[in-house]
Length: 199
Image (cartoon, rainbow, N blue to C red; front, side):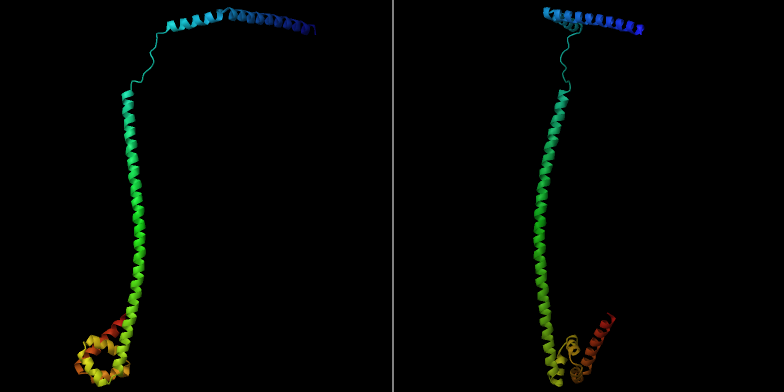
């Protein structure tokens, strides 16, 4: 316990000495600052430092001409890219207009095709109606009179009507034809029937 008290006194004494030294240093610094001595020392150190080193020139970029070339090149490239972009925009606009025109033309073409199909269907129907009426006329004629007309027709044309007629009326007309004409018409009809059966 006595040793602990002895250590505590030594510690207090040491601490007191440290406080006294710190107070003296602070007082010395205050005196120097107040008298301007600190500033004089700092100026001396600064002058000594600058006198020891040679005076340096400000650094200059030796590659300024090269830099200017690069900048000019970049500027030219930028202009080229802008021109290319403008051309592409114009092409895109022209392509868009062409596509629109193509769509309009395609629409008109589809309408024309639809009208043409309707016209063809109508004319086929009209032609079929005409053939049916003409066939009915030939069927209702006297067989001898019809045979005289069929003798004058081309065999292919006559075969078309004979093929459409009722079998009894066609037989009476064929009986009134010359053997050569009747044979030609029969060959044509047989050939048509053979082709139809093959298909």
